[in-house]
Amino acid sequence: MFGGGAEDALPARGQLGSSLSELQKSGGLLLATDFRVERIDREGDTLVVTGRSAGGEEWLLERIDEIICATGQRPDYTIASELRIKLDPWLESSEALGPLIDPNLHSCGTVRPHGYKELAHPEPNFYTAGVKSYGRAPTFLMATGYEQVRSIAAALAGDFASADEVQLDLPQTGVCSVNLTEPKGATACCGSGPEPAQPAAESCCAVTPRAAIPKGEPAAACCS
Image 1: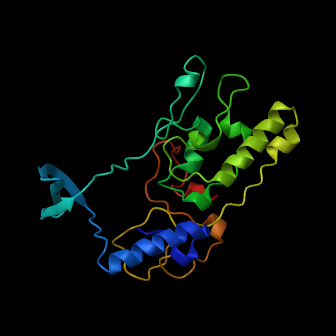
Image 2: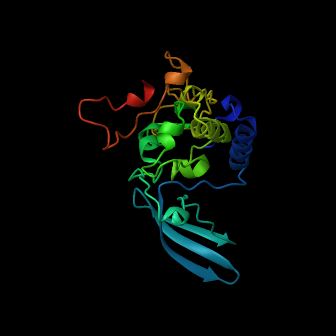
């Protein structure tokens, strides 16, 4: 829930998560999960949130100054409305990139190298790069964008040998889909227990198979 901590290969993010975890332990932060909001009332200058847990227990959160809804992001393709683009129906990413970055299957560190081929659209010489190429997936890293642009630039210049040779070494972040009911110390790719037996680059959390995966292919195809 708070990221990879000391094991996070992105140290600043790991430190942020650890600081939040310490704040929770000291009582300065309340973490309310499996919580459905049913009503919001104003009480003077503050808000009172009434809701219910997954088990049916009523929750009351009082003295709230502000509610910030972090509901995710989605790309704005208005600028390309007259062009022929093809998007993944789930993520709104480049179509070929969708299965490679699906956050149900991948953390930041298990996305395999990709370049101009996966970022292309039916419109000739039109590519999507950067965070917009990931659509609604929250796992984009700037190192990925740098290599995307390098591959695209090489392809536009006609140097397809260089464009095809995509080299991307992403950090194992310790952040991916987790089973919160898993017993403490259980082995998992998210760093909640001993290191997995397989190499880090092949570890992934195959939680929900994509409907787009053809029949006969394993749900954990993201590791191949």
